[in-house]
Length: 79
Image 1 (cartoon, rainbow, N blue to C red):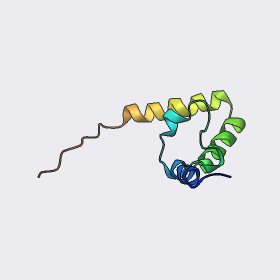
Image 2 (cartoon, rainbow, N blue to C red):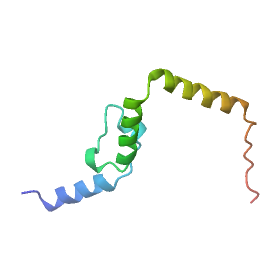
Image 3 (spheres, rainbow, N blue to C red):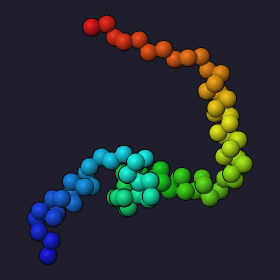
Image 4 (cartoon, rainbow, N blue to C red):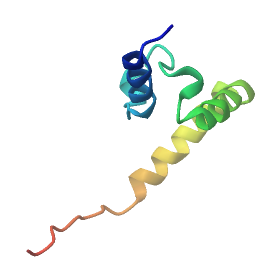
């Protein structure tokens, strides 16, 4: 029988915000409790249905657009 401390620890893990790019490099660490599960499913579908050539074409187009955009300047707010 799980103790009360175990249940609290599990709840904290579920509520904890993680950086998926770092924590989930080798696969999702939260499994079905992942807050990004909808994105994981759509990403898997995209990977299955899109050829590598098409992915490279998309990436090249995005890079081309980014390189032709004017620079974005960020000015600090006056305090």
